Image (cartoon, rainbow, N blue to C red; front, top):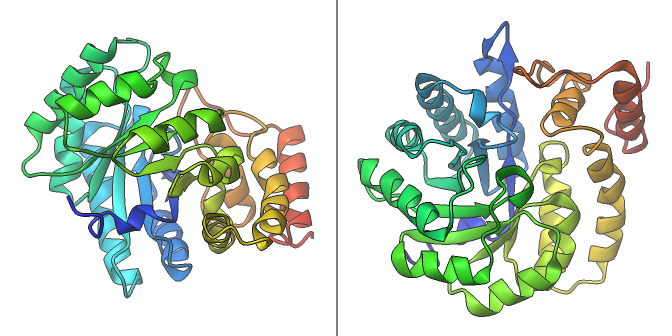
Length: 304
């Protein structure tokens, strides 16, 4: 795959939460979330995955979620807003079925983590990726994501090099850990684009070789995140000011487990409900008050 085909990775990619209403996907709210990203000319969105509560989605819901996101992106944007689906399944068999549904529904790429809880070694991760690829109806790029806190498996540079040798369909890698030195090593040793996958680490990782970022705070301020990434990549002094401006919002979205805070923020802004699936719970009163204070200070929320 050419670098031109992957140009959408050079920028801000927003990880969308999956909006629910009365236990089912709220398609109208999903449209609003996608439209907001399109207005700010976000290069791509991720649905499913950790932020999208992908672990809770039924296989048929995956097709519905991806198809609606693709349709909304096409209708809302005068450019190609890409749609990436995040595969977070423990079972390789289920991961393959979910990935196939996402591909048939029009996903542009798959963001695949190591199977959580199972904690396979690198050979197991390779087998997992190969089973997903074998199930796809056509070629689709894979983006690996390293989330050791969630999965229990750390895809270190040596593991990634082995993965790339055995699975050349891996077109990019997202690092969601908190080590800029790891980013420097990966950028120097891997032949594929590197993405930041943790909002607090966007600046340090871009400075150490990452090309873009998959971001949660981009749900609220996608334009500012895109400007921050561009300024950091260009070594523009304005990047420091943008980083300081984003920091309080990023911290506010860490008040409890993702995606509960971002759903609470979007509910406060009347963009989507704050419904989550068990075992997650909505923000409690103290958490909601603190988050709304941060939104007010960021001038996103007008106090009543």
